[in-house]
Length: 262
Image (cartoon, one colour):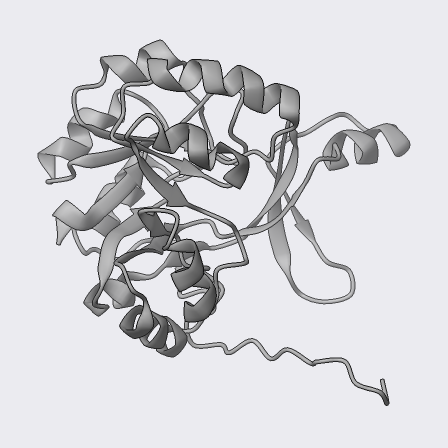
């Protein structure tokens, strides 16, 4: 099973520890082209790693940024790329590299997934679904997909500097990676800001080990950002971890569709 674990890297020194417990495939967020990850990496750093590697590019890019990135892609020594911006699709395919589509919040039904799977090698399934829904989706997709099983689930991404604006408005000392609480409810979340905007993350670590029995899965993804190495290793070894829950796996999301009487 560990051969199917896809683990994001926070520090290059962690790779040796992961290899000791049987992890063979790693994700590296590319510097200047990724957001929401604890650390990002230069191309030279990625290229020096001797392992199965994927490069993550999850920022939505403008035309100038895509043009600049296209010149860099051939220099990155990896098996493939995890992307959010489909404007990169043809450029990566010309390199004969694998392409994995990771669109947060959107890939939540098998019809959409099968459409994307006509163009890419695999797709990350939304982690806002129940286990029952994920089981149904994986039974209907035309190719093996990627399932998120560990990490702080991303709630929202904004290009605005939400923390900077808040502290400036209230004339308070700046802080980053803070926990805020919704005054209208009981939801708490992490806010993390960098030069590309702000993301919000769930307060608790998502522990999705119950999904390991799903079929038709290419990789089980572990996003280790902002989580101590020891906790990640405990999860990989099947041990319990602190500050964790099963997210929405047992909590169906009910959507109300608009109608003429609304």
